[in-house]
Length: 87
Image (cartoon, rainbow, N blue to C red; front, side):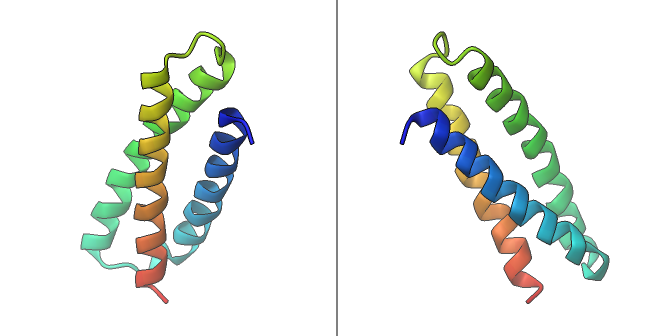
């Protein structure tokens, strides 16, 4: 699987976790809402980096790809933790 495919798959999984967490947010307490807001800011940064890397995949530096991947992994964990907290 190519690095682009891995990032796309990661993005799809993050979107799934994000959508599930959003549905559960109406039950959340204020501290969870603050965590959600922080994750949303990171989500926007991740999407921006991902769009740039996918658009300019050949020119994207290894460091940029690694940064996007790390941010994606952190986001996935954050959204997953929020989702699991409400189960």
